Amino acid sequence: MQELQTGGRYQISAGQRAAMGELGGESATEDECSKAIRDFYTEENYLIDTHTAVAAAVAGKTQQLKHK
Image 1 (cartoon, rainbow, N blue to C red):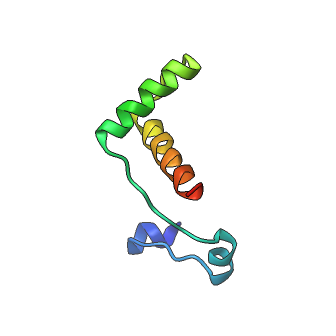
Image 2: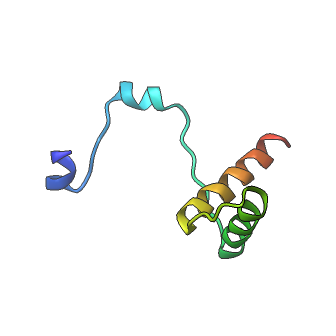
């Protein structure tokens, strides 16, 4: 982590990269996050924060893509 602090970046080894598998990225809109918060509260009676809502919304999108 010293490399990140002094050089502003962190590089992983080829072995670490291979162990990670495929990387991807996704985002969620405010409406998708609001829906995730609402749905989670309705279904689980638990209020999630906005960062968790992004993860929940993205997970939902990812699952939908896998089922197509």
